[in-house]
Image (tube, rainbow, N blue to C red; front, side, top):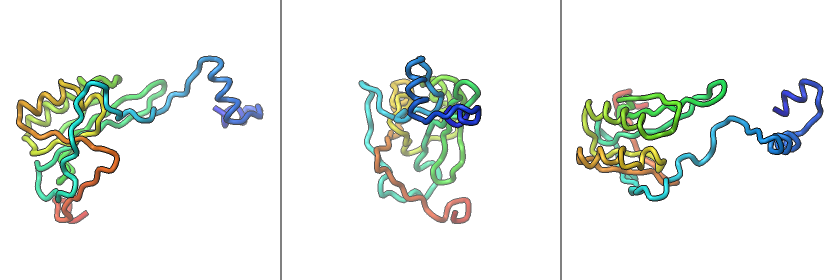
Length: 162
């Protein structure tokens, strides 16, 4: 907004624009930080793949949500992938951050196989009972990233050592 106003001939700085927008009750549309914070009351699982070499398909699957900016809002894309092969098993788009589109993607992925471990962040979609309950039925161990989560993927994967 500051850049646009400057181009229109109004000499304003970022802080003035922030103050005026706050006074008018306006907010910028951008990705909010810390959306992966655990939802109070949801179970948080330990991080399991730490220090384990991922050397075969279906050993560890993972899911994450990314944000696609649109004119006036965002679309949210969840992708479920196999860590070893980097193959996307299922994905869904949603215009809300409820857990339903994540659960739908998970059901599709589980129709293609079953991992030993399923890793996600601690966001409310992935820690919801609807999402984690599917793992109990399938006897899949659930893992959730913390701040310092790292994993080693074998260099002899299907992409020839990427």
